[in-house]
Amino acid sequence: MTDIIVIGGGVTGCAIARELSRRDWKVTVLERASDVCEGTSKANSGIVHGGFDAAPGSRKAALNVEGSRMMEALSRELDFPYKRNGSLVLSFDEKDRPLLQRLYDQGQQNGVEGLEILEAEQVRRLEPEVSENVVAALHAPSGGIVCPFGLTIALAENAAVNGVEFRLNTEVERIEKLEEGYRLITNRGIFRSAVVVNAAGVYADRFHNMVSAEKIRIIPRKGEYCLMDKKVGDYVSHTLFQLPTKFGKGVLVTPTVHGNLLAGPTAVDVGDPESVDTTPQGLEEVLKRAGLSVRALPARQIITSFAGLRAHEEQGDFVLGQPDDAPGFFDAAGIESPGLTCAPAIGRYIAQEVAGYLPAAEKKDFIAVRKGIPNMETAGPEERKRLIEENPAYAKVICRCELVTEGEILDAIHRPLGATTLDGIKRRTRAGMGRCQAGFCAPGTVEILARELGKDMGEICKNEPGSRFLTGYDKDGVTAAEKTNGQCM
Image (cartoon, rainbow, N blue to C red):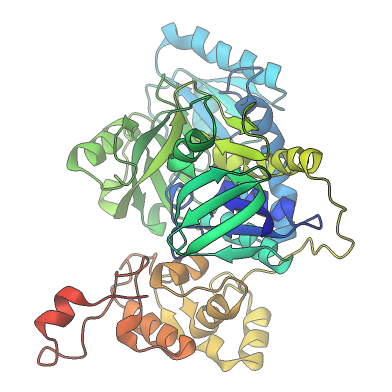
């Protein structure tokens, strides 16, 4: 029996878990994947939105502004990459000026600081590569960019240090209401708790509808992206939006906190909550739409593409708090854009709501800070020298594209909630995220993982159980059974 179970180890679930860890509760996070940050949180724009797009009075609007204001201090506290680079919403037609003005007015009502409408020449001074068709833009200096992996993992690690238990590879199959609390049936046994927090992303409606007659419906909305090399990471300095439609904020062009250039996403409603494949049509649409914002999108520098799903609730706003007929069951559902920005504020809100239902004292020994993995690529000469003197593994480069060393990979494995897969290493250190997309560094990373985890190299997975990276040691030693039946636990 535990006090609180959080379903979902994405950015929302981890933000909630961290806030819950401030009080004397026994908290458990159940995550169906092999690591945190395996769903929507790993495949999004990495944008900290200013807060002008959400309808005034909505939960999205209030939590967007609050989360945006929290992000800079939180990045210092938990040591993850964040930059306030500002955003521009571009207008290409004089007839659309009323729409731009409406966004400005919404932002004013929502409390967004520093908004201004710029004329074409002002926009070009800020962004020389912007399209010659731009006639005006809404400038939001409070907008920013963040590493979605870094944010999610930092929240999770800090929650774990403060006593939260993370149960990975644990899929919730059914929830039953009890006279007191809830029973959760999973693929790894039965859990009971007084409180359940539903932060299950595109699956959140399933769990809500198991316990409440007040039904909700989540529509998975797929977005495809193109990521470009660091050679063109400075092509723009602001996040460039286009005037939004009913499907969202449209295709953007933005720098990333790690120095790449990102374009996307599309917005297509799909029925399959696992549909994260990219398509020729989707990627063509990304390049076509992104090309409207800048003069000559450097598409030849694309190094990878990916797709993610947004959990769109059909009513259009976040679903937060307890249903009337399910006391002790707290939703954090329908968390689509600007959900990444809102996550810290959602965590605070849900924790306060839970405290009103299940009171508990605040911890006197709560650890508010967390130190991230050293980054040899960005470290100065003195810092590099110190790290190498402390551990020579920091002198051994494993990933040349991103200058990731063995020391960084070792840290990623042995820290709280340490990496156990190739993707876990990639999201914590960026090994494999460079131009060659792990073509050269993957074997070395597999070798280190196997050695440090006490496993055979053939047991190491890319991500989920069964995604073995190796099937044998040489072509003569690989049997048909190994090719087809090999599993990774």
